[in-house]
Amino acid sequence: MSESNQIDIHSLHHLVLRETENDSILEMDPSFYRNLSEFIGNLRKQEFDGVESKIKNTMIEMASELTSLLIRIRLEKITKSSDVQFGNLLDEEKFILDSHEEQSERIEMILSATINGKSKFLESLSQNHKTKKVVIRFLKEVDELVGADLEKYGPFKTEDIATIPYENAQALISKNIATKVRWED
Image 1 (cartoon, rainbow, N blue to C red):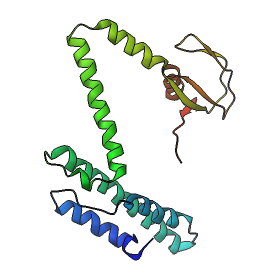
Image 2 (tube, helix red, strand yellow):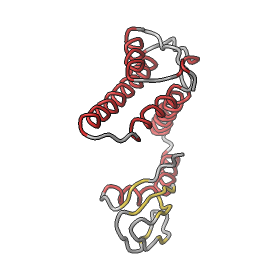
Image 3 (tube, one colour):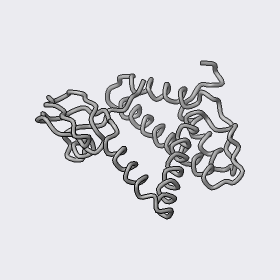
């Protein structure tokens, strides 16, 4: 990482201030979030005792809060602006926006099908969503269950990972019997 890409609490704070003082989205280093993640990760790895440990924890908390604030400010600018400069968006922000676009498309799809009397389409959509497969990790033992797709699943032991229908996964997650597995690198 070059000197100009080094991130510390001071530079992060300065960047958040600049972003709040500007109406447009500032141009940033394309690897900013990765560099910031590296900075916070390195802080977390350091081991200190006493006052130094408290300082380190406070720095991590400050960096986390500033990061959250920066993302929220930048995304708010995007939603409120009619003239967004997409060239200044970072890939991670585009990833977030992609989910917003998909949500808007789904809202329009449901609205259109409802007001155009396409009940069969809505029924099909509902059934497909209920039976869409989700990966979960079991926090408790579970006996065999019949899925929303009428297939049998299980039995499962604590820490087992399985792919089951969405509706069943949500029921288990809401009862703290399982947790959704998110694919992360």
